Amino acid sequence: MVYCGDSKAGPAEVLAVIPAELRARLRPEFAFEFLAFARFLGAFGDAAAITVHDRITAAMEESPPTDSLVFSLCTGMWPADRDPVLSQCIETIAMSLLPWLAERQ
Image (cartoon, rainbow, N blue to C red; front, side, top):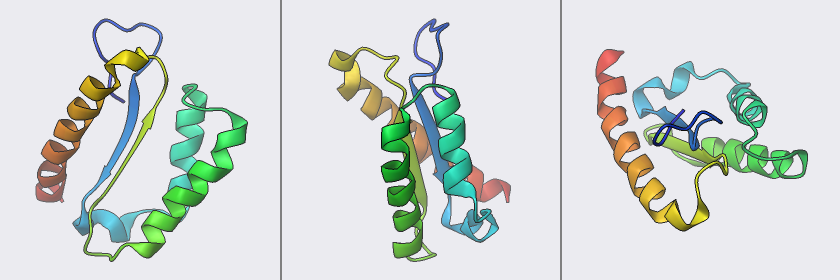
């Protein structure tokens, strides 16, 4: 979860960073569990859940196992006019976490 500022309402973004070296250890239910957690935080409603689940599942199935994956879901708790700043922050965090997580295995 990525919080921005002193947000007490919840995270601005829910982020999953999966280095290629750890993909084989993902549970088959990863997409469902990640979305269940994000929905619990209010990231999106029921109408979008199936579409988001299908896209995460497709990305996991269609990408080579040697690719790292990053899934990021905006919770809508960050002002929309600041989305470019948030996107840049999330990208920096993800790219920093990939080598750190791979090294920890």
